[in-house]
Length: 175
Image (cartoon, rainbow, N blue to C red; front, side):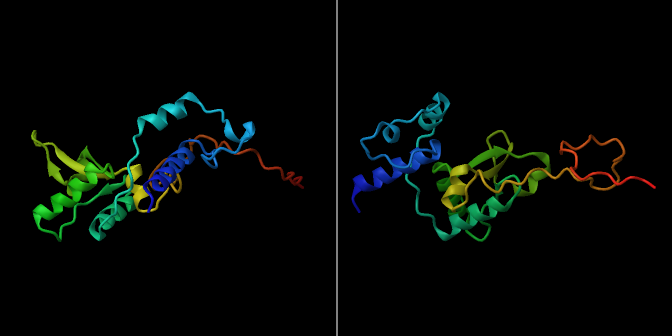
């Protein structure tokens, strides 16, 4: 494959991700098609996120990312079936490629600890947006809104009113 063609495809993918109205990076000789109004924060985001070519994932790396993508906080678990050195190699390669990040473990997630740092702080691994993209998941889609339904035992008498507009159905007169 031509390296220039792959670079052009990568640039187009980056442009489309940050500037959705851009359809192509080819010159079309029409001002309306070749010039775009772009917000400065879009340019800043574009420049602040250096892009790398997506690495080819091994089956184990794909499994780690897929399991993490299913967790509500995108927390992944290091593969337990591998020898320790191989497990470290898998996780470290995903961290180096920015598909996973290491985060301090909250107390309620200590069962998922991947390692402890030099100070003894428990560390978890979390799937990044790039990690989601690497397994074909759009990080901006499918995020469920937090469940605000009563969980039982809660006093629902003084709940705030809904922001829904009032019903358009006319009220029936009472006899």
